[in-house]
Length: 81
Image (cartoon, rainbow, N blue to C red; front, side, top):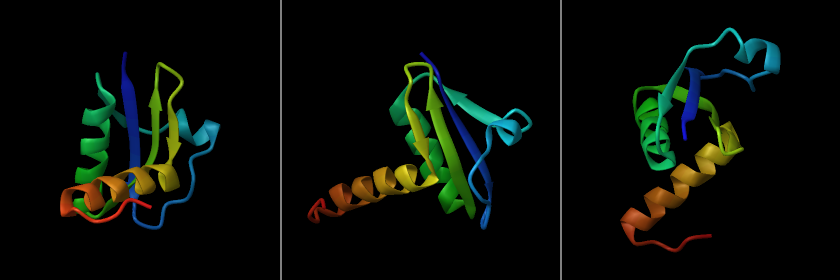
């Protein structure tokens, strides 16, 4: 199983299928690793735009942001909404 994380500079829009074909990505064997990388991308000042997996997983930048936000709240011991 592999997961690919596509990223871009802040202010980047959603990825179209045509654009995706031309973009670089980083590939991981697990979803947790891919989300960890997405968090790293944010801390580095970029934006994770798309996460796709061979299992049909597809998360756009909003879904990735939601997933990363839940992880932050869990670590802080706050409520998950």
